Image 1 (cartoon, rainbow, N blue to C red):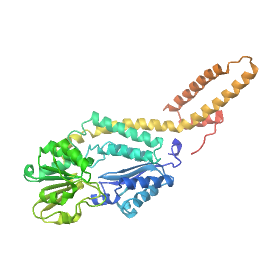
Image 2 (cartoon, rainbow, N blue to C red):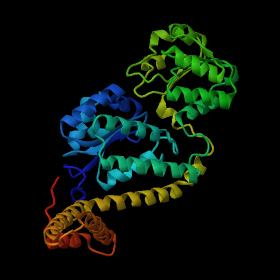
Image 3 (cartoon, rainbow, N blue to C red):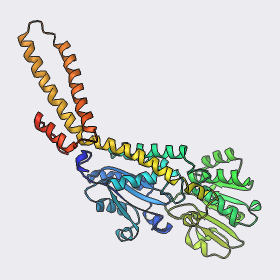
Length: 418
């Protein structure tokens, strides 16, 4: 993307992996928590990466930015996660320039989500951009692109029915319980973890099951208490976790830790018990699933549980893609304007230099010359001239490269190179 004067690196690159080729365990290896992401961003800045957005969710981990080569971003990802370059070569993908831009549009608008129409990713993108800006890695291109994706996401959500019916992992977990757990109305449910996924799951449990035998546990007691009051459900301290696991029939884990928070010794095999692990990396030790009577379900299994509106949501994909094409097109128009922005700036500077020289010359020749008034008039003329040139360069019917070359030649402009 050299001609757009955005970065000293001339390729916008996406490297990542998602649910399509990487199973939940593999995605867990490449998951990045907040601390790892912050260190990765600092390291990237030190190594000359110019503009970087890091997203790590349940169904994908991706790095989007300007770097000398894709291998640079892949190495950063592997250095700050538990994944290896060999693992990445097996399940990862690389996109560049327009392909990378288009991919981010599909991700941010829910078309590339594990559950079609899941818009949780957009809040993650907003959070990721704020973190990039905090660490000095949010250049104007990244800001404009993220805002364009957010705009497309809002329009799709408001103008199509692609999010009709609940579409999140939280809802899929409730659908699973309703479909697969016998006599769910009389089963006791324990929800461990009250972060965003935990809160959404609690809301869906109450809304779609009318269940009154729900218990919440969270490591931060205040958060559990607040959620318990909101939905009128029972709350227990984290110290009672093992006891509550034994007392409940269903355990939903949404703790978001980097290692298992529920281990095999904590789960008795004394009766049928369903455990839903809504986390990447896994927060329930895999050994739990081999115990007699225990049914352990992970995100990949839940993603296959769909409600009966899914087919209807798929029918809105063409409309959503049309909206993406429109907003993507507007972004590309802005991007195209970056091609001639340095020439317009140089032209304006040249005209101002000519203005100052001429005003100084006239002040010496003419008694009582009103330099301030002349400055106002000539400045307005410069603005009009540069605006005419800019509008000419925006015309899709002209050859922009030839026009830029001619302007530079006529006015003898020197354009700084990035």
